[in-house]
Length: 240
Image (cartoon, rainbow, N blue to C red; front, side, top):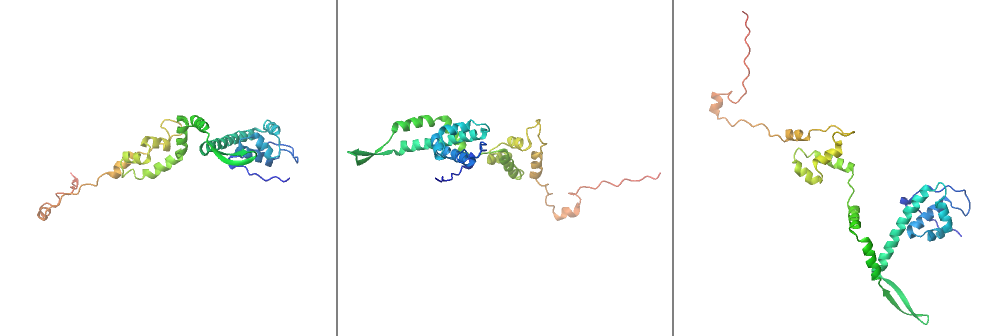
């Protein structure tokens, strides 16, 4: 009977265990299908049956020579399968399970059962402060070094026109931390020389020179050089 091809999820790719080619053996494609079903069910027995192999054969393959990457994919698939089982357990605890009442072999009515005890156990296991913190951390965007560098470089152009405190409030990181991420920690190997951004900002923000006050026409006529810088006198040359 022809088996349906099962594609493996991209996150569970691995190097198959080298085996001698045979019709009913653990071919690379059969190994991939086994890992894919294992990730969907969390059951070694179901995964082995889905690919036409035995549970014992699956464990022999796991412990075979050259199966290091296969074992890694196996463990990752079990984690995915356990996550699926957790979801199923939550769904049954919250939505309930229907059962049919039979009388003399005939269905009489359908009853809906809610397993409140299971729901409380699941909440006690998974609703812990540590897991809540992990869920919040997983939802937060990752902020790596390159993101910090790009963000700092974009806002560094505005540094001359904005106070340092305002720039730090916008970026969410202090100027010192941004400089450490961009140029490295001073004194440690790999650190680069830092530009003097404060001096550059002060020079660019410096106020323009003060123009002389308006001089009345008569004052300009009487003292035209009053507001001009006098030229130094020409030195006299003595010939003796």
